[in-house]
Image: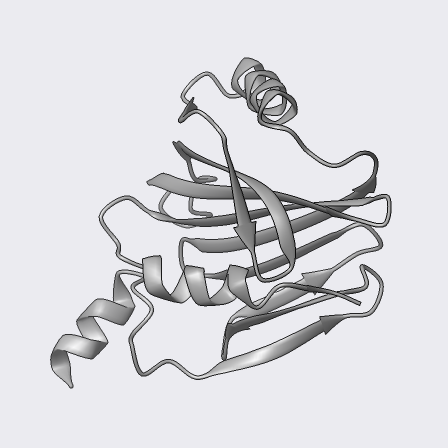
Length: 160
């Protein structure tokens, strides 16, 4: 149990983590998320956070994403965030349909108490359905292995 507690303290989502289904009525999407994480929803954005882990979903209207359009989004993000480095976007297929995925690294917001920042790895998924576009960012500190949990979360994404 001590190893699980130490792992959880670093932000690692344990294999035994309980997941809940979030139905974001304003955004008209649903997705699994780890129980105990903080959820904040506005009309066009949703964030789910715990320690330095973050899940961000933003919705807009527009055409289906392409690898070129996601590259362009990341280039714009890089201009405002010089520390950002990104991989080339790839077309993939999720349970909810076609998507474009890219991975990037960036720095977290400063901790309000310590002022420390951590380097985050973020998997960005851009999905579209019926003229709506969702950008789903799944971020975790570098060195923390949340691959399985984040895969479970993105595969559970549904349009409502």
